[in-house]
Length: 383
Ligand SMILES: O=C(O)CCC(=O)C(=O)O
Ligand SMILES: [Fe+2]
Image (cartoon, rainbow, N blue to C red; front, side, top):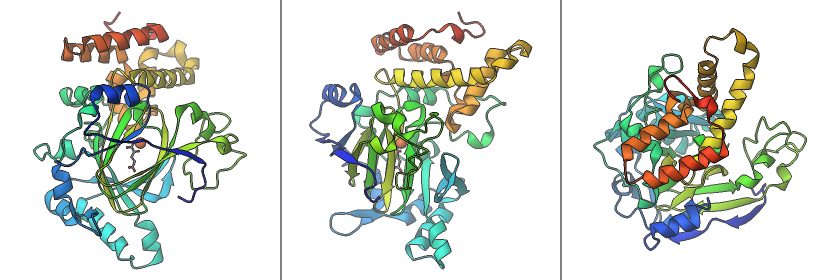
């Protein structure tokens, strides 16, 4: 990144070993502020198994460990040099192929064309689901109150033949991922799926993060609020994005073994400054479910408006809205009808957790009820 954007601050860094859960909630999770936590990965098997000594105290990826131990089926790999709609183009390849390309890239490729096209970034690899017996890490206490993965663990796959297919089943199995990429790989500007929180731990390597607080999100959109800036390194057209030059960014250089907490709804762009492996979860709980809800509700209204003119000739207008909502939203979203029916989700979650979570759900449900009219949520058998 070459300093095109105006950076007005750095993300705070805190020693995670002396921070209490209550302090994390008060200072970061409830106020929805980013933070970098240090000292929490010391006992992780990933840090030992996946890395080799590098220069100084640095570690570097042990790529052969992955090829030997995780010959997963096909992986989703982003080609960082080509854009497809709002994201990078994804390719499917085996772990061995991914590693061969990485190593080939490190050795310069056989031509300039190869070098350009071999900036591949393994993203969203569901290691935990694919290798459940291999305990690579433990989720830090700060992030265990996770209703999203808790739900998905107990309700494996929702099958809806209209909107799912077998290839995407692993994709929707959980929101626990491993990311691996050579220096120079990157992730375009985005806010996380469902406006969830994420946490991301560098097993080795370094990342640069640029964050935009939600109060400024509108500034990265065009005047119709349709398309948003893709790459902060591009020459962003003032004509297309008239407010972009007013944006003020918060930066973080995340080092090896540091964990970053990404709050809900903060747009961010991420660059691997070294060869990097990271572990990342998306999640939500009582502190951010209202963000998730607002996004769903907005998307629902869009899906509904879009087909309003065929309402009279539709047998199941509501069902069609729900399916369109699912199909229009992010890829992973399509498999989770529970999110398209938040009330159903809340009921199931409530049954699952019983007493311990009782007051949290009550707080959150009342928040939703005071904010929105749930009448459209009526579905078969629900009142
Ligand atoms: O590390 C990356 O490339 C992107 C990670 C990310 O966007 C996240 O953890 O929310
Ligand atoms: Fe993200």
